Length: 149
Image 1 (tube, rainbow, N blue to C red):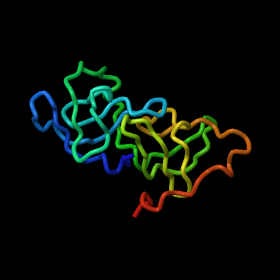
Image 2: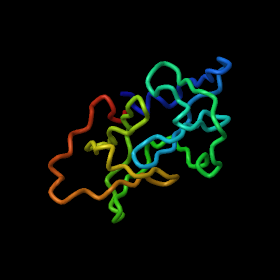
Image 3: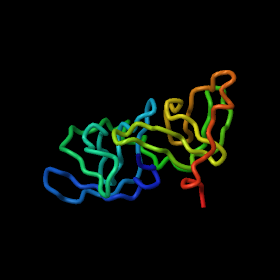
Image 4: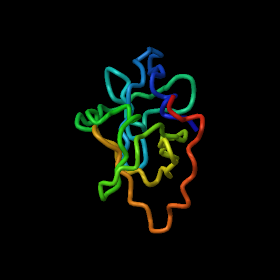
């Protein structure tokens, strides 16, 4: 597992020519998954990324990504987290990602939300599914390693 804060700023290298392509500047998240990665000059679909863990993000050749999707890439950290009802839960401190780019957890200052509640992250906010009734006690405390400094 890797934290988004670790992924942002990592070098990105194209496997076809072993040339440095840029640095990770943001991601596009849909349905609890990273679907694309902004590496500066262009956006790479997550299907072309070999692994999200490691010292360098490596990627295969890929078809150009839809420009509308590319415009949605964001650094995520600091965005407000809202429910469908518009209730604010706090700001994103970090995301935990698995090796395939699936969001395992959304870290807020005072709690950790399961990644499967995350629906979309846009230019303004992250939207999470409403919490099922009685589920408040199931929230885990934030990971101390991801607390904002």
